[in-house]
Image 1 (tube, helix red, strand yellow):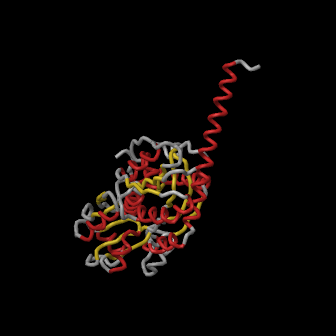
Image 2: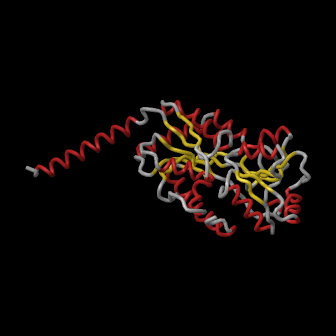
Image 3: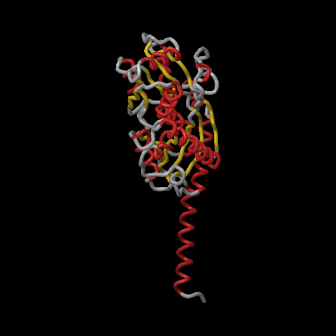
Length: 320
């Protein structure tokens, strides 16, 4: 016979494994919460809400969206990693929140503290100005900024975001000094631009309604190729700036989520991302499908962090 202490340990382990297995197999039994680290109404928020609506039927549970803003996504990221790793609290995973710890002291490590679930799509980025602005082209905008150091202001969703770092990278390449004005989200930045308080906004295609209505002028996009919705608008490379950006968007949770639960989430959100209602949202925002499974998404994030650390050092943004 086994010693009583050994027997009790084995029984305890079997019970724990049994409960864990049942929990994973039954998942989910209650609503899922998705944390969006940026304000309501921006591209991240709109995309997440559309994905949630398309995916609820495949999870059999409601999906609740919670916006937790601040720190260029770092505050929301912290809320994700400190959640219980049971799969019921996850969040959107975008570049800005992932490389925030390389800009300043943060309470998480993107290489170690997340369970990556799925890569979904890529954002379209661009720079917009008011319809009555004097700049008809991005080259004119750059020339004016070069001639008037410190005078041109541009809005972004925050210090250390992909938008801010890219604009500072452009400035370094072009010998420009301009001023980043951080906002909690795209709608606030766009409203400030429309009100004449800043000169430009550099962000995702949350500006599409105002561009399409003619209230804002899109000067440039940041992808490898021209955006399908605005074929007359050049890319950065076409304007002489050797940069191309396509920011990935996916879902992640705190480290330690059971792989079986990750698979349930991955499979459901993959089906949701294929729903016509969701793909129509991507088309409306001029965003492209960019699917990666959990392992591929983790690898992609790891590789991206290496290149973005170099950018952070290049523009001198670390520890500000």
